[in-house]
Structure formats: C-alpha cells, structure tokens
Picture 1 (cartoon, helix red, strand yellow):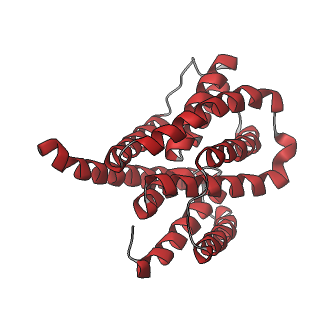
Picture 2 (cartoon, one colour):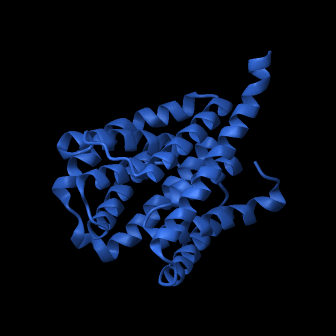
Length: 249
C-alpha cells in the first residue's frame, strides 16, 4: 500500500479521474481505475472499491435513464452474472496476491486489445449469447472489477445503439456490482477515506459532465483504452515481478 502521506491524494485522484471518464464515455471506471486501485490498496480491496463506484455511478445514471431499460433483455444477463459472482469472489480470496495481480493484469490487457480490435462474435447473440456474456461478466466483475467489457461485446454483437446501451448497462452495472459487494463485503477503510472516496466520485462526475460536451466520444474512448492497457500492463508487470523469486527459486 502507498505510504500514508500519499495514500489519500492518490486514492482521491484515481477515483475522481475514473468517475470523470465514466461520465464522459458511459464506460471506463473499471477499465481505468481498477488496476490503479488494485496497485494502491491490494487486489481484493481495490476491486471492491471499483464495485462500490459502479453501484454509485450506475444508480445515479439510472435516475435519468431508467425508462430505457429493457427488462426482458436484462434477465438472462443478470441471472447468469448472479450465478458466477460467488465463484469470482472465491477465486479472488483464495489466490496469492502475485498470482492475482498477474491474472488481473493479463485479463485487463487482453480485454482492452479485444475491444480495440472491434471483433464480432456470432455466439454472443440471442439468449445464449446473453447468458454467456452475463456469466463471464459476473465472474470478471467480482474477481477483477471488469464486468463491463463482456457486456459491451454482447451489446455490439446484438446491434444495440448507444442510446439503448447506456440505460441497460447502468441497470446491469448496478445489480452486478451489488452482487459482487455482497459476495465479498466492504473493504476496511477509515471513515475519512470513505468520505474522500465519495467527494472524489461526485467531483469526477461533475468534471466529466462539463468536459463531455467538448470532447469527441471517439477520442475519449481512445484515451480510456490507452490508460486501461497501460494499467493492465503495469499490474501484470508487478505480478510477474513478485512471482519471479518463486519461479527462480
């Protein structure tokens, strides 16, 4: 964990930036902030903090977009995620930190490259595709704070427009993050730390709202994926570095 004098400013900056990115592009908190939260407070608590932010951001977003939620389309996604969230939480609790960091870094880097490639998967269509995407998303959200990419891939293959995607992604994000927190519990942070987390989150959403109107969506997404790939590679590098003594020994 970072030294005490640097911990709070670093945490606040990560949360603020992640929330601003999420507000600007509709996705991105987990991709941008989760790897750095993991490096700052550890793989388990870092992921849970990303889950907490997902609940807050999705819940606030739904206040304005809930009429666009397609409940029938959401049922298989949410049901499949509910089944795999406990498995992801169990994996996160049982793996040693170096192995978990290596896995998180490799998974994030692979997901970003997959999203950048614009790949289409016919299997991710219909009810079967929704079940597969929900199962993968639930596991990844609980274990790594990265539930969004699998749902984004499903939405792209299902032909959803951006207007359709946003409210449904917020509805799904709210529920799957609640499931993930329930499976793992809240991190043991101090009250001032939680207060800073909340203030930084709110400030980030306000900043993102102001900047969104001036920034092309395409450029925003490029920045998100670049930062996410960098965070994934740094996390992977730290995990491999911590594994190295054991591998050499």
